[in-house]
Length: 510
Image: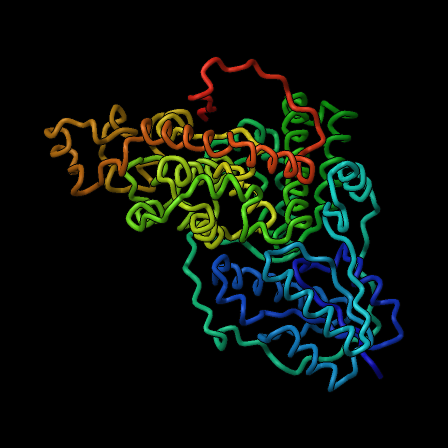
């Protein structure tokens, strides 16, 4: 009997999974497939921690499938070769999967799979996922369609009635040469863990979400922690949105069940808005599949003419720039695989404006650091923070200001930079200003135990901003920016802001 293949990609769950529901209606036997494709291990934006996290969640998916009568086949193989092998053994009738909005490599891979399906007369049924709308040419109808999709009733997993093709093989991940860096923060994988995390967040931490997410310390305590699960699809965006809406409704109708209902509702509204932003940014990559390779405004990117400086790049990557707060953020990210959104923007801003590093080199390094690397969000943000879209305000972050705002006593800096552990608070954000006798007393000699700033922060930022405004001021770049705005720009009305008098230094210091 022919088989229908359910190809799990970035949707490692059994609940709210339309391809699984539709495939269960088939008369054919069902083959559940998850692939680790060898080509991915060679990509510039893929790290072994990504593959390890996916496999952790795939193994939990295998347990969930077993509970409803399914068997998951985990293969380390090229997609075409894997499908061809199963086709020769079983004869594939149809392939069921969710649409995937990944990097340019996955886009090309899907084109190749589509060609294989056509040649072999295999029907490939792809179903919408998250808030990404395939086939749009502009943003005029996106929000309406996205919000409508979020209201669709959640789907429960089917009973597979023992029609699943057994898998006699046990996947051995050590056989594929996987060697991920050891992260200091371990996350429990799987759909159940994702649901538990969502419930805990909405029941406890969400009250402080709005004010807590700007700090790299407080964001760990009061952030949702859902991004790694959303990235691999261990939980659906629709489920998160609907569960959040239920919590908002509960507090509105029964405000006495929580303390400070007003604060709860503000934070939950902020969280819900960020869920929409997530879909908004991924939609950009859906509409322009090579944003990980080419800047949205190619003319601005060319005008900027950023050239790789290996010393600056290495010091930025290793958290040895001499700017304590930035270095602490880079070291936290390398250690835990995660840092909050605002600090991600600051990190990219420093690379772009202070250090004048090429956006793609910086972006690929950061992609490999994030356990929750989502190409649509990541490359959209890289473009925004590097000033290569032409439609976004130039956001030039002051690392020193951010440090003083988010870590006034320097405890976060001391945690992640032990070289500075004894530095007095007076100097913790600018240790190069310590008198030599203080440096000796606290065992932190500048340029010996800890480096002086790689460049002057204020001067380099101002120069970078001015060069960026010059790059986007040409007639050709402005024309291109209008096209970018037409295709990718948000259709919500921006808040009115007072005009700046001196455009040469027009920048927002965060």
